[in-house]
Length: 215
Ligand SMILES: N[C@@H](CCC(=O)N[C@@H](CS)C(=O)NCC(=O)O)C(=O)O
Image 1 (cartoon, rainbow, N blue to C red):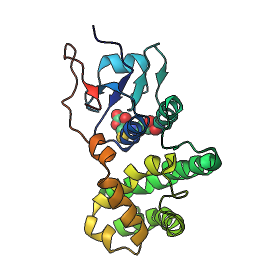
Image 2: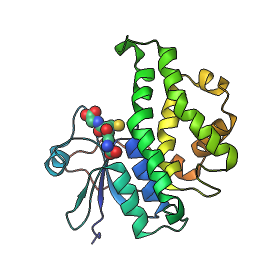
Image 3: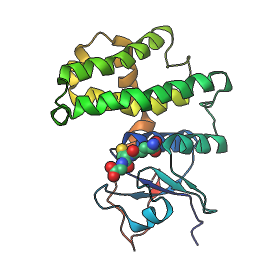
Image 4: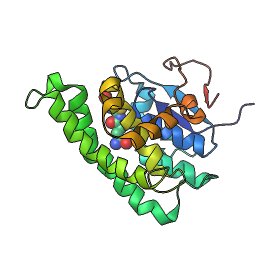
């Protein structure tokens, strides 16, 4: 008999879901993964989390965690062999993630979909986003990772968003004066756990056999 697993509703390309999956991998956990499509969310997911965003983690005891940062923290509280939840930098990490989520993400969306936001040009949106990138570059000039010489939740919480920014126009991103950030991103893109995070799964359907992540 298969033992029950915590269940993660996820969407491969969503940066919030990416960071939750990274948290699960850094915590060396296994979950049942249900890949969704945003246009056709499973009713089982909406029943436990009506706000309809991914990621959503449903624990075996029925508890539902529906914010990506909370999923990361929950996972790393189970097991944190690499010390990502380092107490010394936790409040700084949370502040940086909040800056990412509350400020940078908005400029990123406008930069990515500039045609939907004609109030400013795409270049102006990019420059607004670069204010955060400059902060990250300054941090990475001091250390290998954002908050020191070890990975913390700030790195895994922010990396998927910087990746998305870079992918709007890779040529432009790599021509910007942020060499440390570019190296940091490249290191993440090549990281074995990130490669695992980007494994492709077919969207889940009722009756499918269980998909375990990581496989
Ligand atoms: N604050 C949430 C945000 C999650 C979020 O916005 N996810 C997007 C996908 S990247 C989503 O599910 N959007 C719902 C939709 O587009 O219908 C978290 O951190 O988990």
